[in-house]
Length: 262
Image 1 (cartoon, rainbow, N blue to C red):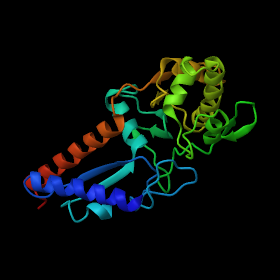
Image 2 (image 1 turned 180 degrees about the vertical axis):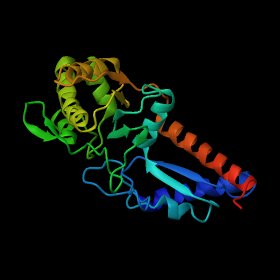
Image 3 (image 1 turned 90 degrees about the horizontal axis):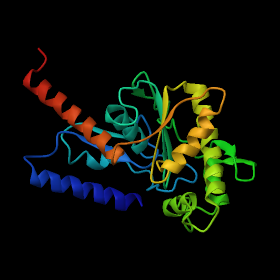
């Protein structure tokens, strides 16, 4: 819930303030939810599995941080990390797809993450794709049709997906892999058509499995505009990306304070 998350965030900031010399000079927040570009508040979207209400991290941290609070979606931070030292290292134009308990996508063009008008670019859960029986349905509903959601939740059961696609779940792994790869391939076909990426990077608790990378690669490279598909390689990329931005912000603050504008 929003209040519990806000309380936890404030408690962390308070601990940092007492353990260091004064309050932090900046903060960077990675949120596993859509983030409004203008306000930094989390955004309610249908079927979002991790939503903690309209949490406003910047407002929560304002009393604890002596400077800017930057908030972005975890998938956007992950894409930045993969571009810095991962599957898209040095690539200016690529698509990063996260396939785990949640579904997400980041579009990077000219070296920058494109956040969209509200900051909701890359929210792929409701893109219509082929379902297991060939019927068109939103991507998030594919997992319901396959029985791969957590009980009483729209969150994907990542453990169940891993078992199903590797043959440890007692089902036909090839059938499940093909169904998921077709659905993801539908999303990527749209992304390729609209953004013309140099490469597609796939990560997440089950998306990065070699068997899934191969299945998705087969779907994407077999289309009219084939694009290389590679696995994400950065550990905890969302936190890695956020940390890197925090260091950049702090470095800039230090330089500006040492050489104030005349």
